[in-house]
Figure 1 (cartoon, rainbow, N blue to C red):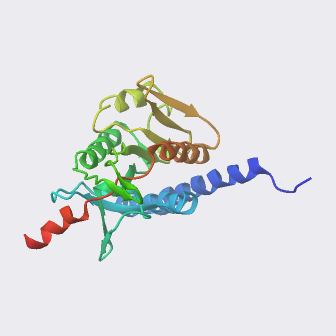
Figure 2: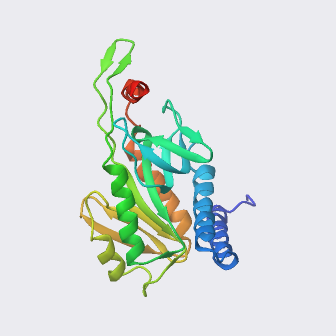
Figure 3: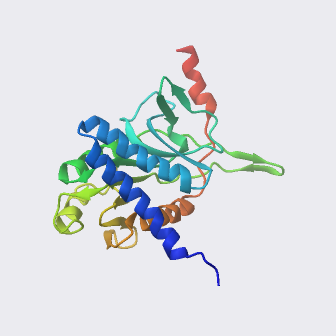
Length: 241
């Protein structure tokens, strides 16, 4: 019999994330420092466990018309097919076409944070995205439909009691259009996701939330497919302005 235990391996993934977030909470007193450290915990998890076609970073998102999103704590974007990512003096700028998901990451979930996260997500979804026809050996495929950009929330704790319940759902339902939060994790309690078929939120209270959330996110990314073919010349027009 193998000495390996799959259940133990999956539990260890969650324990690592929860312990790191707990250490951030105990160690750093400055809110900005604590926030940056929390973001880095989630970014490192995504970079370690998501397929290599994806990359995670704190970033602004820009479109070909020159519009910028607010600064996003965690952007999951395509690194395989995206032709350019700006990285200047520690500031990352990602073209809107390459974005798969955006998250707000803080220590504790409350109504104000949910509202703030919804505004951040909406600032990305409002951006213009190009999509070009795709040439191949026998001709040209039509331009790919734009993929939905996932929005989410990542925290260690929740101010609500119970942590995942009616008040949380009420806050999420305040915006189920441009700012909708499709998926999230409260690492000490569980994760949530939006169900398109029922137009409702599902909360899962569990012992290893970070692992369950990661698997749910990967599943949703699989159904997102591949980002569209970016019109790089639309961005190039800014060279003459």
